[in-house]
Image 1 (tube, rainbow, N blue to C red):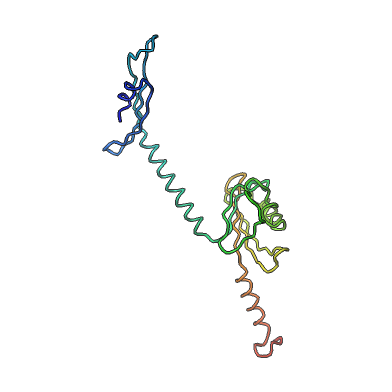
Image 2 (cartoon, rainbow, N blue to C red; image 1 turned 60 degrees about the vertical axis):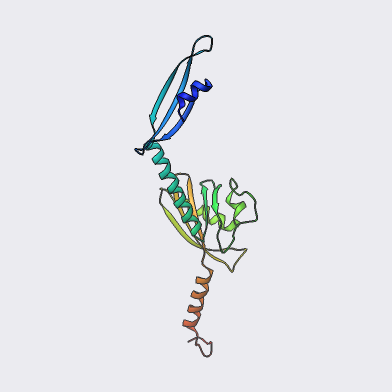
Length: 193
């Protein structure tokens, strides 16, 4: 795998990334030098040490794989949207679906993708997020699904991008209502204490 030999053989420029025994990675390239008749008269060879770039690319790939593994492990519905309410990306929830039945939701307005009343609450809450890292959390019961309790957490991740994590807290709310009922009612008669 010698770029110079390849250029001599083909007459064309050639590039090759080569890993060396010392752990470095270098980009070797050769360029033909031709006379006015097109005859090969020489070759210019350039060698660049690209070890740092390759290490950075590998580190970035590993970081992306870790991030994707974390996202896949989270059972909540997550989506990224811009300040205009346009959906950039989303990750569906494992145990509940609050999205409208829409294909290819990226690029659509939130009101087209999630229930409109939830969309309004998300966008209203987003108005309070001024700086990267700001968070806003609220609980929500949809008009269309009054049996489903949701907790929404919005975090500003860029000046024009936000992530919203939606968690189904219905079981927790049912337990809370049961405890509240039992605290005010006699367990034997069901009457107020």
